[in-house]
Image 1: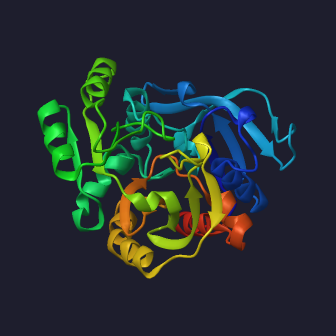
Image 2: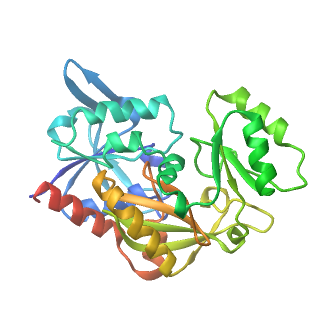
Length: 314
């Protein structure tokens, strides 16, 4: 059985086809005979009991500058497709959260990947708090006194937005830093959200490992090495991807968190591991499968579709 697949994602015309995970997932789906419908989150709507999207049936190809062809714009009832991919990038704001509420109305009759209820309730920097034995010392707070006390205990810390992504707004505050009050004022002025602080892990100089899990099982990893003089290793800000093997510690982490991810319908997940420590569990729009495939030939997209097809009886 061939599936009708809807992709809820950022504008497909501007993606980097050699890096974007959603594009690789779409290519694999098309190669397996599935039909693709594309729309952006602002075109998702609830109308009189139905969840609708305005978009286009598309065809994709790995051809730079000519990677997508569009049919006529049309409206599709998402309750009548087989699979919806929730793949727009954060920020994890109320707009993002609203899409999870709408898609939850059609799931699981229409399989939404990842499960929107648990995406909403498992943001990247909060889900890790369920596994304190695997994570570095961490605090989430808005109160400056709490953050000061954390810094006094640990000396060298990372401070970042709780719902950010791509390395934006990440600061390292070493023992000699005098900017905590100013940064706190800036963050508090920008939003009503708390911030997250973690003990700085010197092992980040050797890389921040992205481990890909499919249905709770690790399929491989890439290492993201920060530029000289840079704390952040995210590829969005110049981190260099490198081939890397899974260590026994990586596998131990996956054994602990895998059952939770599987239970909560998180089919495609990317976790971040620095040294021996789990720092994030990315469920909203994880990346890294194209780099993994180039480095060691692991086709994570194929494994993802095998899991989805099994659930859909395809």
